[in-house]
Amino acid sequence: MFNVQKLNRRELLARLCLLVAGAVLNISPSNSIAGNRKNSRLVTISHPQATDGTGGKDNVNLNDDVVKLMVDEGIKAFTGKNNLVDAWSAIIPDPDKRVAIKVNCKIEGIYTKAKVVKPITDGLIQYGVNPDNIIIYDATENAFAYAGFIKNSGPGIKVGEVYPDFGGYHASLFNRTAKLLTGGYIFFESPYRCDYLINVPVLKAMDSFAGVTLSMKNHYGSIDNPQTHHEDIMTYIPYLNSLPFIREKTRLIVLDGIFINYRWVNGRDQSYVDILNKLLISDDPVAVDYVGWKIIEKKRQEHGLHPVSPEPVYIQNAANKGLGTINPSQINLNLGS
Image (cartoon, rainbow, N blue to C red; front, side, top):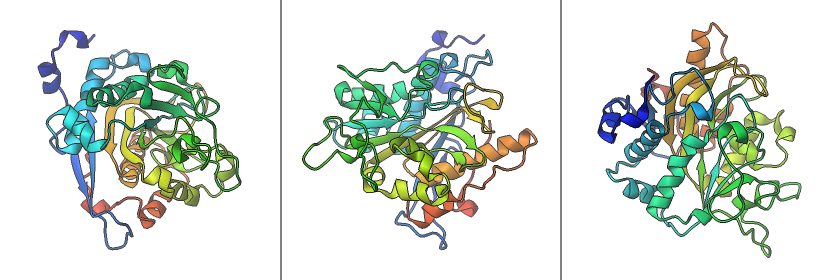
């Protein structure tokens, strides 16, 4: 079995696959896509030893040092900086501000893993962000035990559910979003309000709902009534992500593709989960979801499955709203190993 602890950083770098060659994608909008982005930048990082080789598909099966290297080098590649602190300074302009990290821990079979999030928090702290100003949240803690997260509302990095740990949600009819994103009410500011947002979704199919659940659908965990927005899901996902306190605060998306769920199942079921050993890094939710969707479709084809149903047209709808850019004719989708 591969023992990552015996490799030094130079050896790990030598084994980091697809980081530079073909991994940085410049995505430009076509004339048919509305939007205010001139181009987008997306980095894919793969490493065959991100997992321990046992076939396990949980947080415990990740090699910490390899995953950290993937995140660190991916962040540097995304920003074009050679130094990790400089890279984080390009993402988080003010280290004295609060940073919220949205994970996906609803389903016990596939979820955002703590070993993917830890290099992010380590990088933030190294840059100068106070651990007390970092919040890791989701609407549920269903998979926290498998994901490696430990709830904490005391000193240090905060980890927990939006409700009740971090002030809950607005209760008004038209605004049921997490108070840590909105800042709370005008006269009653949430003590946990965030200034910047980092989205760490997971690579997951979602048959019968949105087709896939990636970066934009991840914010269904930032509202308290997602169940009421399943019928209008293809229009509501773009609407939700266009809200200023999500759109303007989002500084980074790190798609956790170490494992891939290529067919929707609920609960503690990993029968349709494969090992992929991949991360996607960008600040463009449309580009991330488009590339992630294509990765899922490729995996489904390998397993003899039909394309996801329904087709995730919310991605095109989001592009039409100017939330990001997609242009298949100009994207070199490097979906190799």
